Amino acid sequence: MADIDLTGVFPAMTTPFTPDGRVDHEQLRADAARLAEAGVDGLVPVGSTGESATLTHDEHVAVVETVVDAVDVPVVAGAGSNSTREAVSLSRRSAEAGADGLLLISPYYNRPEQAGLLDHYRTVADAVDLPQVVYNVPSRTGRNVEPDTVVALAEHRNVAGYKAASGDAGRISEVIERTRDAAFRVLSGDDGMTLPVISMGGTGVVSVVANVEPRRTVGMVRAALEGDFDRARALHHELGPLVRALFAESNPAPVKEAMAHRGLGPATVRPPLTPPSEANAGRLAAALDDLAASDATADSAGGGERAGTREDECADGEVDA
Image (cartoon, rainbow, N blue to C red; front, top):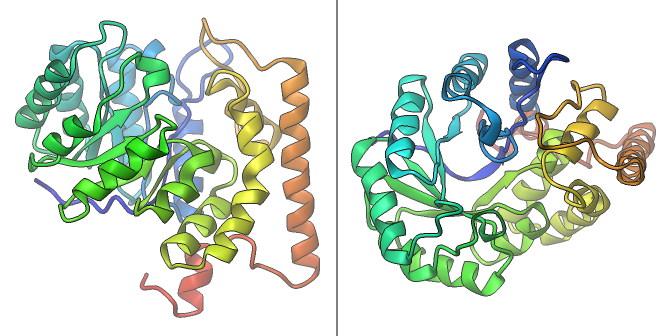
């Protein structure tokens, strides 16, 4: 199995569409390059935020190929399905497209028991020799991947981590506690929970907000991982209003609206998703404008403290390039 360091910020990328609904690969390539330049530690295309549910399998693989071609950071491709056979196929095709790792949502709608979840993940891990991340998001799947199941899966050489998006701090803490001596990493899958998860021993986040605020997100996560919780808390609270607005309606419509407000691509989503309400679009704009005003104030005061980007830190000699 190729190694991958599941530490830091991994934006859950959006999939941009042209006005007629086709995947906009030029914008996708620009998004990937922009995020990598901002200092993120890897990219996660074609997950829930990437609207994988409304992509064909050929579109899915083409998105992975474009992102892999655009950047040098690790690419962890979404490849989950509620069909084990389909998850194996998508995982193999993603590996052939150049993905460095796989993100596997637990089977949704058919809601297998824990024994079925174990069989599902082990089957994919046996079939594809890439690092794989178990993704637990019961609000979308209707079923928790219980701590006992995650701990058992962590014993497999190809199961490298766990994306925790249950919102249940007790379950997340138990998984971290019981896998902390293994070669296994726990990532927050909820931007509002990133700081608490790292404080419990998690190693980073698969982030939605990083699509529009990558430098602040990188700064927060890096500060927390280095034990500077005063700085991490300050950045966490700076991001709070935007994070809440991003999840007031179904993801990824709000984050695409936020990106469009920043001039970072179209807000187009595929049906059955719809654009955010006028009220929430205004809330997003206000949160984004407040952050931009804060940046302008810091810059005019000779700042640069707000983000703690990789480039800034390398210039200071604090981390290796």
